[in-house]
Each structure stands twice: as structure tokens, then as C-alpha cells.
Length: 291
Image (cartoon, rainbow, N blue to C red; front, side, top):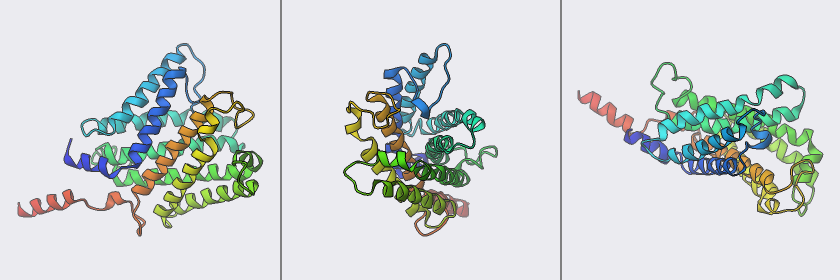
């Protein structure tokens, strides 16, 4: 691995740390409960399912750690991207079965936002951008595609706040006024962020606003008080700490994905930071000029 790989890891902080921490925590849950992440990871029943769930949990923990080391970051980013794409594919049957239900698009939108974060890491750390087969999904081109995926994925998530406004309002903390208003406001805000990122209109600001909103959702809606509550936050959700804790971690990782998108987007330009030449590029250019 090169020094440039180390720099890419460093420049991806703190999004990388938050993303990997949330993913590792989800992996720990899979190991402890010998199961996948409820509706967010809809793996059908089969023989040996619990063993596969534990193996996936171990993988999530291992790859989260490996992303932080220069010697293993590239391999970890590649493996994680494939894993997340497989995770996203688990949502395809529900889309084919009921494309008219907005809740189905909400589910795939949440996972697609998570995949976009993994794609940013793949684009930055995989080291495959110079290979013809991977040139469009790694490096600068890959980052822009991840950015577009994230922007498109935010739209159905925001729309769900309005389609299911009554349910969304019940998730707003009771001590806040105008709970129905917050349901609509957050939905409109998320869709506005998605469109801004998609159309490259202040995309970094939009991604940071989305990060802030998701962070608030994580702590205000699925915060520690819900982990120990005797009554589920949602009437249809299972009793116990596992569901709200999983919801918290999913929201955490999605917020980290938004931060990764923001951290790789230029402030005043529509191009991602990946397109800006690093000091290594200048050094290489100087060496080639001398030659």
C-alpha cells in the first residue's frame, strides 16, 4: 500500500470512523442474537440461517476494523462494497412484489443510503480506479455515482414522512410541539437535500444538513431511552431493546454515509474533492517533467 492510501484513510475521517463504528456495532448484534437486522436485512429462512447471521456479524466487525489500516483498507473497502450490494439485493423481491407501496421504497431507500456510504469508501480506498473494468465505479466517477445513489435514495425516505405522517408524528418526542408539523417538515427537508445533492446545488451543505437531521433522528427517535422502555416505540415492533437499538444503529450508519458524501464534496463547486489533485499528483508531475 502507498502513502496515498494512508492519506485517503485520513481524509475520510470522521465519516469513516462513525460508519465503521456503527457497522461493527450492528455486527455485534448479529453475533449476540444469531440473527440479521430485522426488516432492514430481510434474509429468508433456510437451514443454517443463524450460523450465516453470525458469520455476517463477524465479517462486519472485521471489515470495520480493517478499513482503518493502510495494509488492509483496500481489500476491506472492496469486500464491504460487495457485501452491501448483496444486502441491497435482498430488497429487490419486495419491490417486484409491491412497487405501489411507498413503505417498500422507504425500505430500499434506507439501505441504498447505507450502500452509498460504502461506495464512497470503495471509490476512495479500493485502489481500482486505474483498472478499465472498475474505472467507472471507483475513483472520481465512482464517487459521483455514489453521490447520485445517495440523493435518489433520500427521496423515498423523505416522502415516507408525509405519506405516513401520522406514524411519523408518533415517533416525534412527545415534549416537542407540532408533532405533525415536524413530520411534514422533516420529510420536505430530506427531499430538498436529496434534490440538492442530485442537481449539485450546494451539495456539500445539503449532505451536511441531511447528516444533522439523521443524527437528530437517531438520538431523539431511537435514543437510549427506547432501548430500555417496556413499551415499544412503534406498536407493531417487537418488545425489548433489540429493535430500537438496531433502528438507532441503522440511522447512525446512514448519517455517517451522509457525512462521507459531504466530506468528499467540494464547498463551492459541483465536483467532488476526489477530482482535486493531491500533493502526490504534483510530485509525480514534477518527476515526470524532470525525466
